[in-house]
Length: 310
Image (cartoon, rainbow, N blue to C red; front, side, top):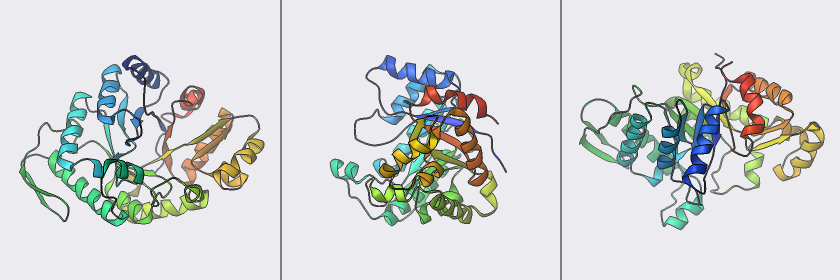
């Protein structure tokens, strides 16, 4: 089932409160539906606090992270933060969650960087705990990584049964689990190496994304049509010379010019061609929820105006 387009801006920081509030208001005024932050230790605003400020400054803007790293917070602490944020934003929260990938974060904070399977196992347990804590009455859980005993967490989220979960990742096991558990699946390159390197670009081709969507479908089964599919556009170039620009960009992306134009992580051309590309990608992959950066948000606004809600 084809879902209507919606768009979000992923920002990272601001030099003061006024700048951040202005960004949040502009995001809403330009027709974007969501404002998100990443979750790293490399010089960014703390997501939950920044998102609450953004929600306070706007009327309908939805807020979330792409994505919160499960390993940085115990699920009880995280659940309390998320329920509070959903309550104080009047039900405008999307809970983006991932297993963690950036090794430099772990190293700088002195945290153990376990192999991907263990990090994913912890994340799955956390999602089960969050779902339980957001329900009514005391909740208990006994897992390999977490134990919860008769905890009746308050406040409860405004959105029922809970705010939508967005799971973001790029590997086969993760995407199958996302298909099984998530309301929104963010499909990314596989970052199993813990850094962005040449393998990241090679995992961002159209062919690779077709394979990734097959993993989501395997995990989702009959519920696939209920899932919203999200992609973050990292390379956006406004130009009347699509081919020439793609040929210039391609070496840096580690792929051919043709592959660069077809990659779901890139949009190259004028607004009309971007609209055509996004419509084609929704038809091919199902991507209807598209994220961009703050540097592109104003120039991309005509595309948002044309496609949002359609």
